[in-house]
Structures are given as structure tokens and as C-alpha cells.
Image (cartoon, rainbow, N blue to C red; front, side, top):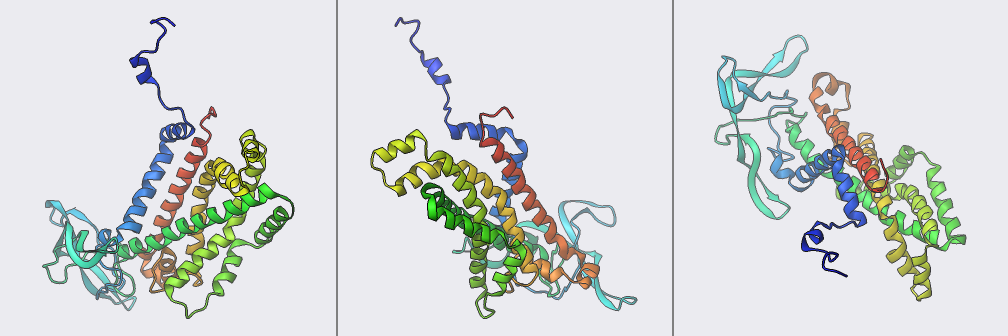
Length: 377
């Protein structure tokens, strides 16, 4: 080999990794819709599941005298046309509607409450163990009766925006934890079914067909109704998570089984058998990793279904219940004709649910394309 044919340092520097996962990441980054969906989900989980106490201006159960008060509009220009660099809201004034014979609240242009960031407010423990009392935004706590309700209040005078932020923690985590349990259960049973075949395969597949024979929502309702009423709310939360995982694992198990059937005759599997590898090692070290790309996509697209199932069960009164707060619980409180007619802002939960579902679908579609980096699509 001559000196001209030897690779130079410059040509070596141009070499990049061409591993499967690097190609997947490269193709995923090119899909802007999927990246936006991923960013939205990261922000929602960080704000609602990690630091909701900091994002929410008030504590979850803090009550006020403003029951079912309308949302306050954030303004930069007051009624006289004066511009302010610092945003503000008008104070709420209690009025009696003579025609409807009910108490209402209207904005009072004579009272301004300026909005500040990192405001001192209700004390809490950040991340569960750090004592703190700062909130992302709020009004001057030194002003008596100062308040800010950008999404109104509920029938007990609690800030509805704060309740949506806190409720997102349970609703988002129940979908994530439930799907994680589904992945574990479905992957293991699907791998066992596909690898061993025979009577084991027959039993697992017939059991999945038995579960799939029942409609999802009636089956959820039957299992959730069996939860004793005297159980603590947190126990009900974990039991509901287990129920969702138990009902959802069948579809993933069947797909993993099909992939295992196509992989168990590959050369590297036969080589592992001839080398004396145990069945568990072959399944969990050689076969299951080959199905992970498919499992990740299925899991991402299935999480919205779990969130919607929890929301539906809680809305029907069969899922989570107070004092726990989830998006389903909030919808149940707003699911009356009176609330829809006179306190329509309590339906603000719906846009948050729709945004989460759309973000997961955007991310899942992007992952589905990225997991096949060799296609021309």
C-alpha cells in the first residue's frame, strides 16, 4: 500500500457513526412535526408531573370567597388607554344578577393587580422534599385580597388553572406508568408464547382473545366498580393503573409473539443455542432487543388511549375520586348543565387533553417512520 492510498486524518474525521440508532435519531430530527410533539410532551410532563407546585399560582385546595368566578383577562392597556409594560388583571367585584337570581363577578377597572414572576405564595415542597414558597407567577402578596384567576374558579372558590396543572400530574403519569406495565407484561408473555409455542402459545393467545372479546369501556367499568369504596384514594389510583395495564397487554403480546416467531430461526439465535445459552438468555438478550423498535412505537401510540380511559372512568365516577385530582375528576365536576351554562370555563380541561393526545400522535407517527430508517419515505 502506497502513501497515496493510506487514509488521512482528514478523511478519518469525516467518518460518522452509521449504527441503527444513530440513523433513527437522524431521521427523527428531520420530522419537524414529531419533534414539536416531543417538545410539547416534555414541557407538559416537566410542568405538570415534576414541578406543578411551582407552575400553579395557588395550592391545590386553597379556597377563596370567589366561587365560580369568571376568568380574569391579562392586560397591557387599561380602560383609559394607558399602556403598561408589566401585565395586570382587574380585580373582581361581586354582583347580583336580577334576572337570573344568581351571584356573578365582573371586572372592576378601578382595581389593578400587577403580575409578577417568582412570587412568594403558598409554601410547598419542590420535588417532594425541597421546602419553598415561590411560584412562577402571581400578584403582589402584600396587597390584601389580591387575586389572579386566569381560568376562573370552581364551585369551592379554588383556582381552576392550578387544579388543571395538578390534575395533569395524575392523568399523565397514569398513562405513562400503565403503559410501562403493559410493555413489561406484554413483552414477556409475547416472547414466551412465540419462543416456546405449543400449549404455552395456545394458552396465552386464547387468553388474549378472551380479553379482546370484551369492549374496553364496559370491561374497565366492571373492573373499576369492583374496587372497594373504603380504599384510600392513592390505593385506588394504583389499582386503576394495574387495571388499565391488565386489559391492554394482550394486543402488544400478540405483536411481540409475531416478531419473535420471525426472529427465533435467525443465525445468531441458532448460534446462541449451539453455544449452550439458556432459554431465558436467548429470549431476553437476543430476541426481545430485536423487537424494541416496534414496541416503542406501539407504546407511544397507546399512551393516549390509557389517558382517555382514565378520564372516561373518572368522569363516570368509577375511577379516581376526590381528594385526588385528575383531568377526569375535573370533567366530572364540570359535567352538569348548570356548570356548562354558567361556568363554561370549567371545560378548559378539554383543550389540555386534546393537546396531549395530539402531541403523542405526532410523536408516535414520527417514531414509526424513524424506526425504519432504510425506507425511502
